[in-house]
Image (tube, rainbow, N blue to C red; front, side, top):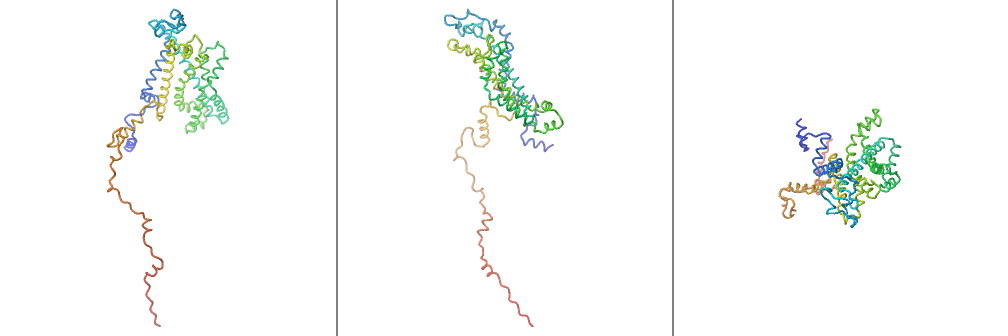
Length: 394
């Protein structure tokens, strides 16, 4: 026991705090990132606003579809009357140009459309991508080849071109937000998810516990559910968190092009489309939906990065600013006589004491080579000659 504790202490592990398993460890690592916590609070507030849109508009006393022609100046082309787009007690953020519809009501209902479309598309992308990736990784070489080629085709498809073509041919009676979510999910996103899941599956299926489950007679489905999906949870959740802001931007782009959500259903991208000619006369009409999109996408991106770091502690977070400078400062303070931030002078550094430096000893081979050697004849002459033998008497 003492040897084990000594080894743990030498490795620098804190034995006073046991490792928290599973979800507890994830939340602890996520709470350690302040930027991720702020982003999570912003995302939670946006979701709450989207869910409580009817209540908030009821408190204001407005709705997103009612026209107020008395609040716009027809002589000036439909510019809202009053300052800041007619903002006041009755209209908290003012009204739209030309129509007079309430801006606050359209923003909160637009949050419903943008967040709902992006979350729905993400769910379809993750489900389809995991199914195709696991089937490709666990199937035989023919199944893997066919699914991989289909995935490569969808990776190469341009989202905007395909979305414009599909949205133009589908009947207008189909619910537009659902159609936009399905097109975003089926054209893009799921293919990259499938490629990532396939790569992870090929790595995991060579592990001992997965190979043992397959050798024991388990079906492919049972092996995938019981053995592979727990190992795939971390990368899939991380990638899903990063897909949400991409889908929000895609929905806004499609609505901006006029093929997304149709009026009178409010959408942030649709509001930007209508505001592109009013940025001088009524700048708030352009700035409010643009700011809402920016805050939402930025918060989702930061939260996705925080989830990535919390699920994989070995990954370096892009949110940490100045980490290298702090590490360099700690390394300088560890050296005695060095002030952090000041480059030491080479002349001021004392030279090592020459007396303590041992003198170099000659190599054994060199000593042997420098020793004088005697010639063979000289060595024979120098050797003492044996005494002559006495003649034996007869």
